[in-house]
Structure formats: C-alpha cells, structure tokens
Length: 488
Image (cartoon, rainbow, N blue to C red; front, side, top):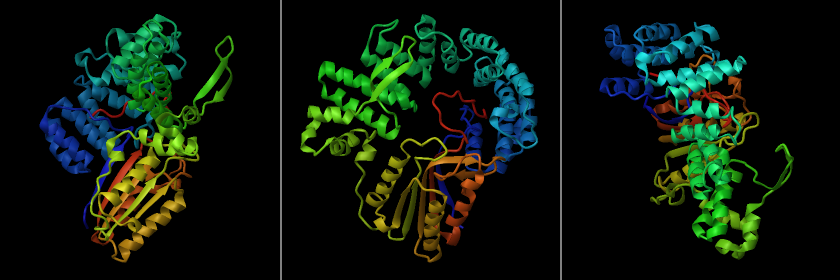
C-alpha cells in the first residue's frame, strides 16, 4: 500500500512546539509528528533513564501522544523532581479538568493547582515557558472559583517578576477602567509582547488619542497586528481607520485598504458595520444603523464604480479582488491543461455551521485550491469536485464518488482537501471531520479520519490529504482565554 501524504495545518490544543538546540531532540519531535511513536521512545528512553530532565519531559510527551497517560505522568514527575517547570506544568495540565479526559487520570483542580504552583514558584527554571503557562492557568482556575482578588494578585506577580508579559498584563488591564492610565500601560506591555487582544486595545487608544497623541496610522499598525493573528473585529476597525485617512489625504491606497477591510469584515467575518450609533449616558447602545459601505462609495464613483450597474456588481468585480490577501490567490500559475486525467480531487470547504462557530475563509480557501488543481496542476475540471458547506450525507456521497473512481481503476492519484472544523474523539485516539450539520460534542455527527484514510489507500493508489482544520474540539471565540498546550 502506498503512503498517504498528509499536510496538516492544525489548531491542536494538546500540542505546542518548543524549540530545543539539541539536534536529536528535534529529530525525536519530528518522529512523533510523523507518527513514529515507538521509534521516538526507543531513541529517547536511554537518555531519559540517564537522568536528563529535558528528555524525561520529552518522554512524558511521547507517551501522552501515544495515549498512555499514566506512564506519561511518571516521566513528567521524574523531570519535575529535577525542577523542570515545563514538566510541572504538564502534570498540572493533565489533572486540569479544562483539558478534557485522560485515561487513567482523574481530573482534580486541587492537584492541578498544586503542580501549577510548583511551576510558578520554580525560580531554578525562571525563564521557562512552563512558569508563565502555569501561572495563567492558575489565574483561570482562581477566576472560575470566584477568587478574583487572589487572581489579580497573581497577575500582578506575573508582570512584576516578568514571568508572563504576554497574556497576564492584558488580563490584568481588563480589571481597570479603559480611561485609567494603568490599563493603557498594561495593554501596551501585552501588545508589545505580541498578544492580539491587547494589540486591539492599544490601537483604540491611538485612535481615540487617549494618553497618546491621536494617530490613525499608528492605530492601523496595531489593528493590523491584531488582525494578522485572527482578531476578527480588527478587520472592521481597519476599514474605519483607513476611510478616515482617505477622507483626510485622498490617497487612493488608503481608499483601497478601507474597501478591502470593510469587505473582509462583512463577507469573511460576517461583522456588521454600524453607523449613526447612539448611546445613553452609561454608554449602553440605544440605536444604530447598518452601514452599506459599498453603496456609499459606489455613489461617489471611486475606482471606476459607475461603469458597473450597481454597487453589488462593483463590489463583486472590484472590491472582492482587493480583499484577496496574497498574490498567490490572484495570480494562479498557468500550467498545461487537462494533462492529469487520472487524478481525482475532492475539495470540501465548510464555513457556515448550524451548531458551531463559522470558519473564516474556508470557502475562499477551497475555491482557490480547486482553481490551483485545474489551472496549475492540469487536472480536468470534471475530475475536481468542490463542495461548500456540506452536511454529513453530502460528504459521504462525495467520498463515495472518490471510492467509485478508485474501485473502477479510473484513478491513479487522489487528492483530498478539507477546510473546516475537526474534533478529537473523547479518548483522543482519533479525529473527526465535522460536517456543517454536525456538532463537536457528538463524534457520531462527524466523519472518522481513519475511515477516510482507509478508503483513499485502497488499490495501491497514491493519495494526498490536505487538512486545514482546527481539531481542538472548542469553538473559536476571540473573547475567550485559552489554556496552553503540552510542552515537550
């Protein structure tokens, strides 16, 4: 059976890469990622037994990936006994109920906090990521327990001792009034250390001119940084800032950016831009109107708008092209057409879910990939099936189409592309692709990835699987605080 080549662009809540200088360490991490678990254990075990705390922690991570959580904890504890903060954090994480169930491990917040505290107080490993991840998880637990003051004290410690200058300053800032200079200072620390939520807040200060000179260009810089990390609301605010710059400068570059981000906010992020907003004396929304940005600019006749029949046509033909982020989407290379007649492609792009959060850009990504297959790879159009927002039966029907071509020996090569939600099984032993009518808490509403692999690997056909999905099992919500994953 030929190998199935799998390219994964994943959002896995159980794994975060942790770079090491040791070449062997990196090679072992690579083995695990490729599924060579037993070989990784064979390479790691002798060094871990010799007492190397980094490799003991690594071995714990490997056993965790294998699903042997009790053995994983045993090795984490050996590493933790040698004051490795990452191992202390990893033990706490396995007992933390927010990370789900782990076979043989009984989730217990008191046990989790015990190990988190060990990591936080581990000054022997002062600069380790394990300290800051443990500290923030402790804050989340304390907040859930209603121990707000104790949680704030912990956040102050994170900032004062520079344990965590990314999330903690932002979380602490949110306990202050927006017009308190302490909030501004804390947001700035967090933003400069790369946290998107704080970057959005800092942009607001520059847009308002609060504690700093009013500077729309500086505001767009910080909104852009937040947007680049997936902060959805930043897209709309970028549109507003660039429009204000355009009204001031009449620079066409600002106009194009304004249109680009208004489009992305409304079409890709489903964010409605409001105008004529009226608030009461307490700042509560009283009334607002939905802004039709395309209609406004169309009436002004900018960017040859008047050669199109209406604003909608102009938006589809002009603004939509501005909204494409990269030259890759616009300038698809042209290859010789219809040369790979024995290649069959199924592209599933699930963006709009009935019971889960929508997946931004999934539809566009699927369309672009299918165009690549036809235009650059030379695959005939009839051999490329693109389905968007597919329910369970539709996905099964299209997979049956692939299977028929495999069984009839028409296909010598198969490409399967999926963009949308995924979910892990409860025991974390397999993963599922989620149809638009499925929901993450019920594995039966999804398609088992192992079954798909089995179908594609039949009859010695070379198959390529490309997954652009989030398998964390959680909804993507910008307003949520997320726990840190495993530290190998």
